[in-house]
Amino acid sequence: MKNITTAVLLAFVALSVIYVIVQQSRNNVPDSSDTATNQTDTEVVNIPEEPVTDPGMEIQNADTPEPMVVNNPEGPSERILVCYFHGTARCYSCIQIENLTRQAVMEGFADEVASGIVEWHEVNTDEPEYYHYTDDYLLYTKSVVVSEFRDGEEIRWKNLDRIWHLYNDEEEYITYVTGEIEAWLEELEGA
Image 1 (tube, rainbow, N blue to C red):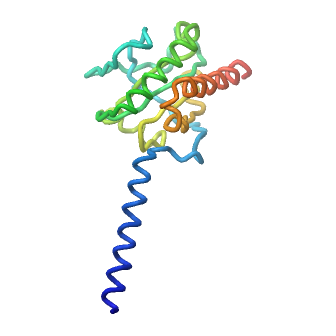
Image 2 (image 1 turned 90 degrees about the vertical axis):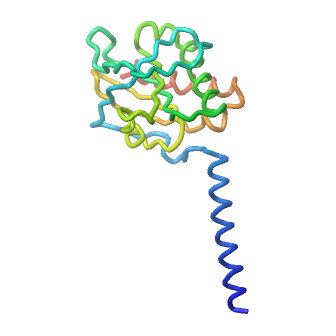
Image 3 (image 1 turned 120 degrees about the vertical axis):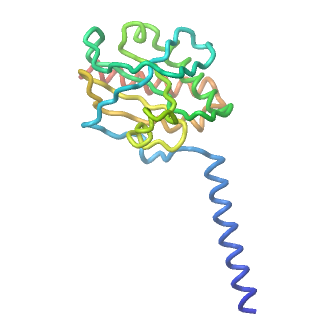
C-alpha cells in the first residue's frame, strides 16, 4: 500500500510539473513585474541596422549586419530606439509581432524616423555578437524593447510585455506600441 501511495504521489508531482511547463510555453508571456527598468551604465552598441523603408516589406535577415553607432555626431543627441529581439527559429506569432511593431513605428512615427529621433531595429539574439542582449534586457522570449539614448548613452529601457497578449488584435497592438513610444517621446521632449 505504501508503494502505491508513493507512486501515485510521484505521478501527481510529475503531471503538475508538466502542466506548469505546458502552460508557460503556451502563454510565452513576459512577467509584467519587470516592465520598466532603468539602466545607467549600459551602452548598447552593435545593434544591427536594418534598412526599413516599407512597413509591409519582407523580413530581412542579413548574414553580417552592420553595427549601428549609437553616438552618431550627425544624428540627434537624444533618440528612442525600438528593437525587436528574436532568435533564428521563428513562428507565425514571432513574425506577426515583428511586422506589427515595424508598422507601428514606420507609420506612426514616419517623421521621427526620418529625422533620426526614433530608430527601428530587429536583432537576432542567436547571433554570437548579440547574445549579450539576452542578459542586458533580461530576455527569455521574443521581445520588443524601447530604449532612450542621450549622447550615445542608454538612459533607460522598457520591455513591452503586453505584446504577447495583443498580437492577434492588430489595432489594439498598434495602439499599445504607438502609445508607449509617444509617452517616451513626450518625456524626451520634456527633459
